[in-house]
Amino acid sequence: MEFDDDCDALGLLCPLPVLRARKRLGAMAAGTVLRLQSDDPAAVIDVPHFCAEAGHDLLATAPEGTANHFFIRKTVSAGLAPD
Image 1: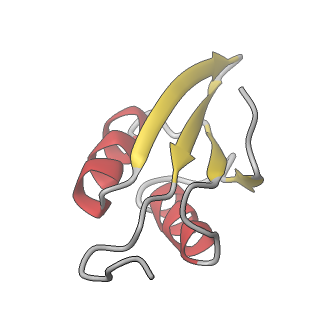
Image 2 (image 1 turned 135 degrees about the horizontal axis):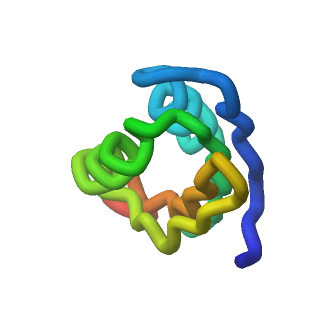
């Protein structure tokens, strides 16, 4: 899957992968896709929950060895109307 930015959270445990993704998504434009790489076993629960709460689209989760790659499309921030 194609992505616009990459966030390496390998070796980090909860809640750091989600915090890194949130920070990276904050700097990205709406509609762009972030690939988050994480080998934290809790990420398979935490990342979908984060996306649902923040309003981002979790496009896919792809296992890669002992890690998972999460593809997240940034949506318009809640409470902000598009121009």
